Image (cartoon, rainbow, N blue to C red; front, side, top):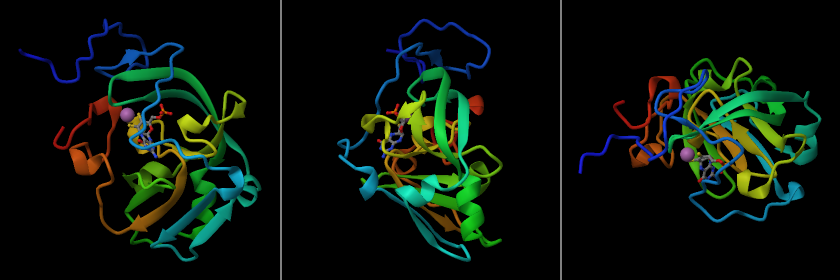
Length: 201
Ligand SMILES: Nc1nc2c(c(=O)[nH]1)N[C@H]1C(S)=C(S)[C@@H](COP(=O)(O)O)O[C@H]1N2
Ligand SMILES: [Mo]
């Protein structure tokens, strides 16, 4: 059988804002987790930024909430084919965390990790300039556990596998180091507009 890579069986309806090869999931928000959803209370959550930084730091739930709030309203794109339009996440911009730790000039990449062990790698530049968040609210309410609550990374301009759920921290590196899916053949960067789904795309 000849299967077009990326074909999901859904009817393709193109609409503005829909990257190539994606479909609009409408009101659905599929859950995609490689691990069992952890029962992580806000009091047990922490977020650490270390590696090539001047001042490594760990934030508690309350300390993270004391940083200036920031929201993302827009679209998200999963590499399995669904896109979701007009989502609203609230939390804190990663710029606020990074300005506390002070990245070294030598830092080029980041390995993001979950409290469950899942990891994803990203170019540092994709986490700055108001394009990435630590998010704990969705549509004005708390972020559901299966969607990464109490808090997750949100990097909406890249495929959603980079948006680590139950995020525990970031390590800044001077080289790229594959995370969970990247080590299994997925693309290092994952730009949906260039269909960077698999290594070599
Ligand atoms: N910790 C963790 N984060 C994760 C994943 C995961 O398996 N574990 N899956 C990724 C993938 S492939 C996608 S598409 C999104 C899915 O987020 P959702 O379940 O809230 O839709 O989370 C990403 N972050
Ligand atoms: Mo995904």
